[in-house]
Image (cartoon, rainbow, N blue to C red):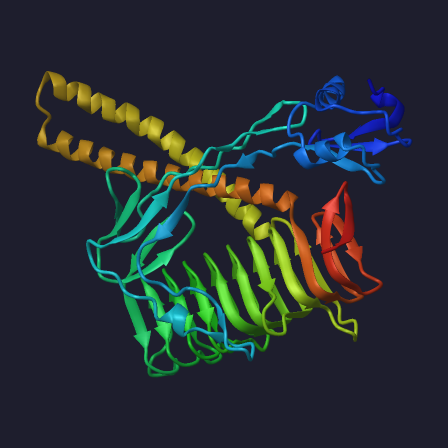
Amino acid sequence: MLEMDDYFKIDVSTDKMQAHLIQTKERNEEDQLTRDELEEWLKEYGVTHGLIEESLLLLISGETVTSPLKVAAGRPAVNGNHAYLKALFHSHETTNDDGLGTVNLRDVIDIESVTSGEKIACKIAATDGVNGVNIFGEELKAVPGRDFVLRKGKNTRVDETGQAVYSLINGQVSMSEKQVHVYPIFEVKGDVDMKVGNITFVGNVIINGNVPTGFSVQADGDIRVRGTVEGARLLAGGSIYVGAGIVGQHKSFLKAGQDIQTTFINEGEVEADGTIEVTQAILHSSSIAGRSIICTKGKGNIVGGTVSAGEEIRAKTIGNAMQTKTLLYIGMNARLMNKQKAAESNRKKAQDELVKLGKLLKVYMDKHKTKPLSGKEKILMLRVQHSFRVAKELLDQSTDELESYGVSEERQRQGAVYVQQTIYPNVDIHFGKYRRKLVAPHQYARISLIDREITIASL
């Protein structure tokens, strides 16, 4: 019988997911090794699961092992998928590049309208995931996917199963991660001019031309501009799409409750609670995104100004050979922190209101059991019921907001800057209170905060 410890040693990874066998000296031809002996020896070191058949056969054959041989591998846990909304209406809502670096917004503007009563979205349930096992046979628990409560949006209803959304009007859809709205449409055939004037609309706004300096466009839903936005003010409850770019002249301001997509941003100020996606370049601008800033198609340049994202910044190049000062920030910005505080305040207010209204409603209902309410009392009870519903909606909305901020904070801890080509000197990188100023160029880099230090690693 072969004394295994005389010829081999075992190396187990710190995560207990791999075991490598290292041969320490040559075996004699007469030193035969059986499968049972090999498995029994591995078992002495606790290695019982995930044995690799090819490696075992190689060892049994007597062939010399010249490098560490993986003999066991665990099966990692597969975490569950999060619940999400699936659109059921026809949409091309993607950013298409025409090869010249301009965004083809025909697709994102020409979203098919929906009709009253149409099923427009459904909720895909979260999954539990699949547990794994390490090489010691210890179970690795999978993290279940996050669920969410599907709530009605503007001009929509949720069916009794809580899984499907139907439109209540004819209009155009605006989707967020957890909610669907349907808005009426206001369309401008050409440019915004003095004849059109400033626009304030409760739905989606489509502008088939440009938005010149000095004009403002406000929409509860999305704003879609086929041309350019100059020194104008655009405010959208949903997303903003600009086909031919933003020429801000340090006068423009665009703010979206969801995402912003455009070809380029030059001397502009843009804010989005979600993602800012640009194909050509972000130049000497202030860009703030609750989630991500992505500039990886076309030229993919970020030069000058301030770029702030809650979770990640992705670009081909950041800064330039002239070492133009460029500021990058990763983490929750002050505006989002204020929104989080407001949501906490609204939730507390709604909770207090529900307790007070609940007690008042109980008084009326108890009284109604003993004798009919007077006309005045019925009116007062209806008002209390209405106020109760309003407070409940505020509680649900603020709770959803706080949950999303919690997810965002989790993502921020894993936040990073990704550079597909070059990041140049004189780029200042901030992760919260931690700062690093680059003094040399780096290529194909991932920049993140590890153990309170901003580190640069290769992609």
